[in-house]
Length: 355
Image (cartoon, rainbow, N blue to C red; front, side):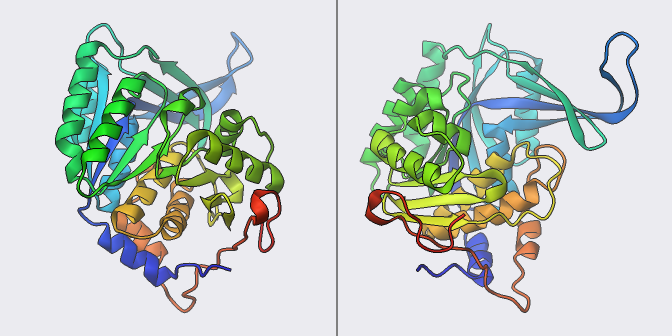
């Protein structure tokens, strides 16, 4: 059995993450929300008519990871690419206002990714995507590589936020690996992966796929306990990562500290309005925990609490330091109460407290 971190441990971790520099490398996008009400069905087709009451824009994708880091009290530095268009300029402004320092390669002829979500009665009705998945130009990649060489040695952690929109490539990941190898004090590297780029993540300290991505990357599908363990073991072999965290939605998190050591962390979410951006909140909290110098179990438990807050709000929410600290207020019951299990013989059985 492994002792769970107490709430006091988690509050201290959050405090120690304040102002820690964290690099976010990945695909940034503009999240566009149209919020309103449905009062009738269209006479033109059997679809709801949404009367828009509110419209807003936020930084999404890697930008949402960065703004969550800023909101939690860390000091993010975002490295990404946008189109040379109005959406790209709006993103740059949103990041600056949100306290996120950023270097954005501007790519002429490439649209900034925009995801428009139409929401009525706190439910998403439809999403419309405008994007390109093409790789960056040589000039754009050169700017990313030059910036990596300059900033990585100063970082407490590095988050690779891959949405498969062209920023994360073999050349960029090779450059990151070379810079990390030369660092006197190597920052921890967390990767939010996309299955198509699985072979680019070798050597990551923490790989964080969701259940669907873990199945696609490993070839081991299914949500049962045994299926998750098989997928995890396959990913250790295929990606050669140090630790693995598979997010299980309503079932919480499966943390593999090694191929033979699995911990199940049940969800703490009390209500779920919208899962949009919850994975970005998890990445930000994980990075805060590791940047604060804590072990991966403590970071995952902190991230689980952060996710519980994120899904209780509509849209991609940036959980604040104060919100999370208040939720973690020790009160009379200090223990977090996670369930812990182990995978024996690298095969198939969780012996205690599985899911």
